[in-house]
Image (tube, rainbow, N blue to C red):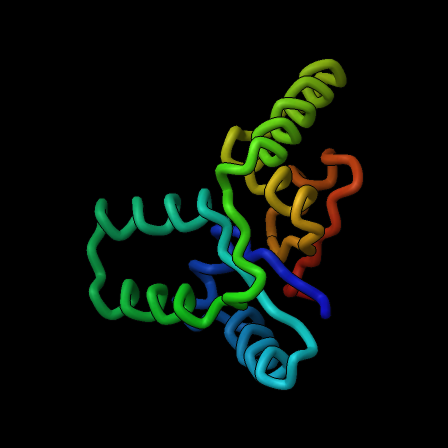
Length: 142
């Protein structure tokens, strides 16, 4: 079963109903119900999205997000606090710093989470993530 992790920008676009993200997410939910794939929202993405709601409240959008969280592939929920994730994040940071290709801390943590848990990241932020060796990602915009 293919497992996806949703990046913050993708979650926000799904909540806003933006094509093609909403349509692709709906297709993924159908595939998930058949057992063909699943998705997770990494803890750092949850933090980033909820920070936005606390700053600019929108009860209807927050309800949509909470529904997305509830529909995650429960059997595949991984602990973000695993030392393996933090260790991988430290390795990514060191490699990027040595190569002069730094990205944001949140993106490093998301990449580490995906690498450790063998997830494909769905993001429209491919420019930052392409510098992380071994990370599988998809851009649903085409």
